[in-house]
Length: 298
Image 1: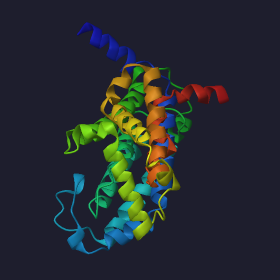
Image 2 (image 1 turned 45 degrees about the vertical axis):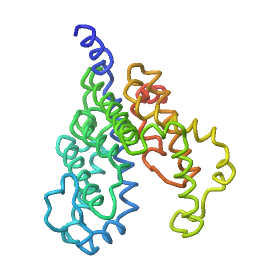
Image 3 (image 1 turned 120 degrees about the horizontal axis):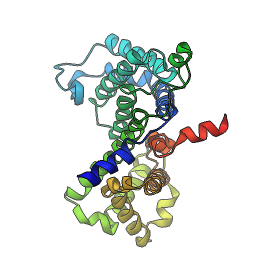
Image 4 (image 1 turned 30 degrees about the vertical axis):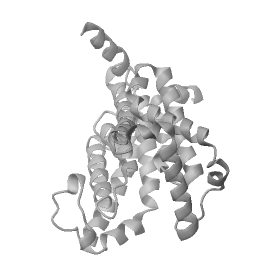
């Protein structure tokens, strides 16, 4: 127990400057403004869809019927305004929790139609941690208005980044366990199931078309090379199922983040499936001590 306590204090509750969670706050806030800014029309069209398609999940699961289009519009703009305040660090004690709560509701509502987009989970979890923590004590309007010296490094500025990293790896761990515990089970490790899925996806794109267009030319070139798919299948399971173990060491955690980042770009190259937050690299920003880079540029 003593060793565990020392480890937690050293790794999860290490002292950090206030710029560490502040940089993550700015990145998440700006990303949400970009991400939602391009989806206003889509969200309104979804809200106006046939109510029989509504299958509420998450925090909206108790809703008996869809919200009115006007309500969804109002909540969308409230989310955007709070996201701007969150990114700027303006009245963070109010705007932070408001932003996290509104984003959770809006994306839960969006996922209550047609299909659930699990790729949004990491973004929402990051917003919740940063919205409810002291991530605006630096690089913020609040800090400028206080006109005080920057706070000294403290553990309260270290744990938000660590928790963001832990939640990130847990989203991958859950995905890996779901694969391993599913009907396909260990067959994922030989790469044959991955190869079959990629092949079916390529045929569907070539025969039926759609948003993604034609299949990637890489599929035709690599499909017969089973060793590549075997390595990719086994590697993806290691990255997902063993994800929490990589948190035991900072260097290992960064190596894992690099591998997961490459995995998403590999998925895009083969299947043209976009995991936007993941492919941007922002989901892995907490694994880097960005505050040190910030101070070097000053």
